[in-house]
Amino acid sequence: MKLLRWVAGLGLAGTLGAVWAAGQPDPNLARNLAATCANCHGTDGRSVAGAGNEGLAGTDKDTLMQKLRDFRSGARPATIMHQISRGYTEAQLELIAAYFAARK
Image (cartoon, rainbow, N blue to C red):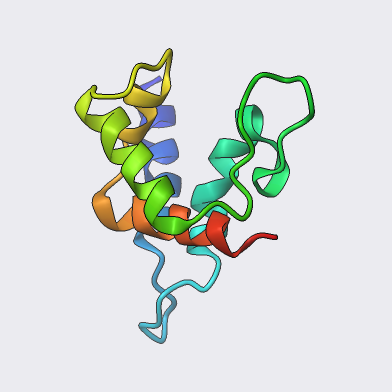
């Protein structure tokens, strides 16, 4: 079981490390991080009508960042977003917010 956790941790570290052999940032990092939002907010941030979760696609980056910061601090009530937002660094949240802001 410990080996499985260790191997899984390596996979996550590789994804979040996001560095190619050439030392360049992974151009897919924002998309990969944002993919974790799909379960509740829909593919590419386009939520299903009537699902009860707001769509994120096309929302202003600063607006998204403020909401994420409010979730992290507890200023905005949430069922799970306060826990999810604390799992990312500020830089990762910036990437996620920029990704959704660019979706139309």
